[in-house]
Image 1 (cartoon, rainbow, N blue to C red):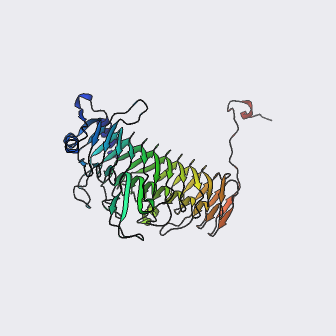
Image 2: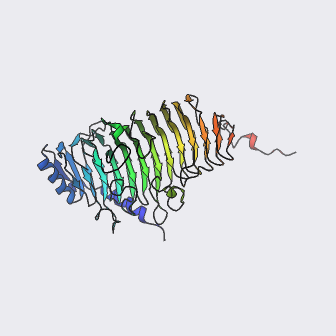
Image 3: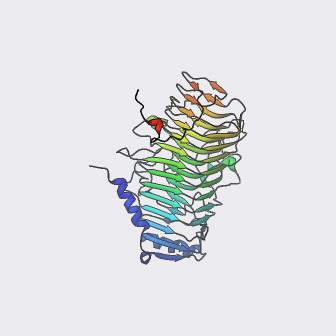
Length: 435
């Protein structure tokens, strides 16, 4: 029997999106937390479509809990910028697990959020550990206030955390994904995340976090992310479903990192896009668990001393047509690949860094049999070299770069990029001429 779950989720998403106007509930902001939070909560408790108008104030700790299929729609101007504003809140919109830290008995709600500007939330305005599908579009997140997390690191016994949106178990169960908690179709598209903070070296700051999902069909596309002090986009430890379902596409995002950032969980950062498996790197090498990742058409400006444009911890990654501008960091690297069988084509690395491409094993990931084809390095200066190869049987295709090869069986194939000439299959040149 064919797997109907993805089709069912898609159908339910369309159904939720197409709720008729007469079924909508309109909630107007008052600017009073004592009214705005309960008014929105009462509407959300009924599920369905809710239209928010005006400016809402959630105070320092206001929170709306979502447990039913819900579409929350703000208003936008002619250019698409949101007119609806929500000020404050601590995890302003939140879909909690039925039992914190435990796998849920059933799927979470389908949640759609459109055209809202979130300002001054604590931690993150958008925290979704338990969803059966999630769609965030046309929103802006700005001036997030960090929350304190009890995490021991070199700088103390706690660190500051902030993010534009968190889907999955990054906060509820750090380091241990909760199976089937966040599933289904996840879309985070065409949003703006303005993540600047006053203490970047003590703050784990992120634009988009999607961590610990199960069987998710995920697209993170067309977002603008500024000044995150750790990772602009972090997509880690996401597993395939029981029937092998799942895919992750990270496309056409525009990311500028902070100039400096927190050195946790390691000293390399702030980074543009981090993807794969980190807490359990064996997942990135396990074909039955590793949710396949593609990265295309992203533009990353990596400004830190130890920044990377793409930092990758998984096998079978495809990365094409990404544009990475390095800001001169002495430990910075454009593309870091630790997994195997990756295919990298037509990427461009500009600016200055220690390396443009750095391929090296890490824990369970062996950096084997990757292909790096036609990487454009004409405007790149490597302070140590252009490419470092530390794995096995990796291939560089294109104009030979400056390479440090500390691996085995790696090779450079000097084949230029090509375009096929125009041909006319019906022309005489295709006809057989007998003797």
